[in-house]
Amino acid sequence: MLEQIRQHLLAIPTSPPDALAGFELRQGLDSTEDPAVWVYVIVRDDKIEALWSDWDQLRERIREAVSEVAGDQVITYVRMWAESEQTVRPVAAP
View 1 (spheres, helix red, strand yellow):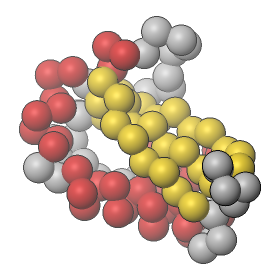
View 2 (cartoon, helix red, strand yellow; view 1 turned 120 degrees about the vertical axis):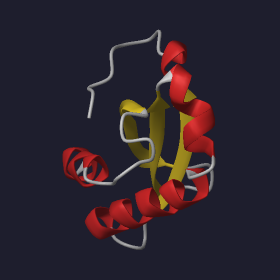
View 3 (cartoon, one colour; view 1 turned 90 degrees about the vertical axis):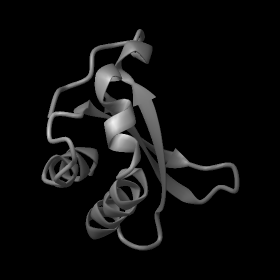
View 4 (cartoon, helix red, strand yellow; view 1 turned 135 degrees about the vertical axis):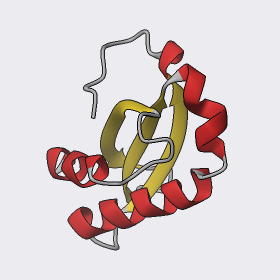
């Protein structure tokens, strides 16, 4: 399921178009034991400010994309990470 979500996310346009470095996706149960997907949007450090004005719309498009794949019963949490915060493992670029 996460790979299908990733493919939907890669199709979402962003402004500026080269703002995203990738996505980190996780699936599991949230603190209330509801099924959830966490989408960490990895943003290039020099594009964060430019992307910020579009962040609310982008976040909504991400939630819609996850819903298309996972259904309405899955809660979607969306967070932004700067590319420089990625120290755990490399992230696939869009």
